[in-house]
Length: 501
Image (cartoon, rainbow, N blue to C red; front, top):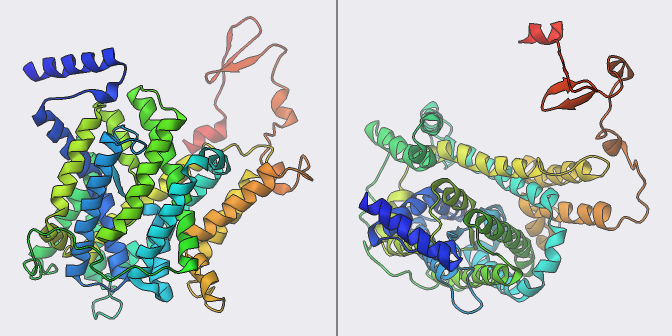
């Protein structure tokens, strides 16, 4: 009861100050809620280094270092975003971490021959460019409406599906058990656990379903002899991330251009998250505050390769957690950032995660990456498709983005700089969506009312015979039909519809 009174008192003080996000909770509650934020995003923050490290052919020890680095930098970026310094940090409850938006592009850079050093170099250069254009981004952002961002987010999820499938099969195509029933069965069991935990009534367990499924899947794998933790003890338990542990960054023009597209998408996502969390918290969010948040994003991203990490952005799932819990304090999220920093100083934890059997990761990855795609589809559902060309913008962009996934060798005969950009499905889809949105929705000269069948097909059409049963003054409200006097007209279900039910 005392705790509830303290929470009510601090909430009242924050309300009087006019900034709910400045609410301060008791120290124990602050770190408890902060830990909840860390657990909510933990699966998301460790997935990118796992994917990129595996693509670069790294050992489990090196992947462990990548994971530790991403936790460490994510913690520092979160503290910068929530506490803030002049011109940097929105001072809102936003958790920062490695952005999923750049994963497929980074994998393409690795496969293009540049290696992890080219990834780090492209992140530094593109983030510095992003930092420079932040003041102008409020003018550029209108070229990234939901029809563009929805395509990009959907493509991110879809392009990661082959990664999940490869993990489910075992991860190493040269291994004798690659694609075995045992591996795919373990992935299926893990995925089933995710779905079952998501179904349970406990909201906390449901939110942590990915992480808990990975733990349970690993225990099952260990019980049947499919997990090996012998390398966990190899290396330091506590260590500060070594700057440029994988060598100095290299700067390739094509890689930087490809990463710059990712940065523009990241800026758009973070802007949306800042606006969303401001609305949830009930605080004022103006262009200056958005600018401070974006500058924190770009500064964190530019510095992160120094400590062997990647692009940073706000985590949308934690914005949802703020809405669900009603805990609006930015200092709670700062405590979560501090927990991430401590975890990042324990590379042994990274090695534990890196030792999780890849089929377990595959089973969880199907749901995790599918969730990213579903988020994009949800964004596309908000797009207006009537009497415009948005349908063909989405269709052509998604199709173009899927080409590198459906045919990985499609661009092999093209120049290296070209194939580096377009081997990434996310880059391909983003470029096509941006260009088509400009062509159809901004450069309207020459547009006609019905430019193609795609427009004609999106108009609402009611058959003449459907109107014969209506009388003058009839109206349809909330699923009911009323006549001109306001009396409800019974609606009888058709026999065909009844039979279908």
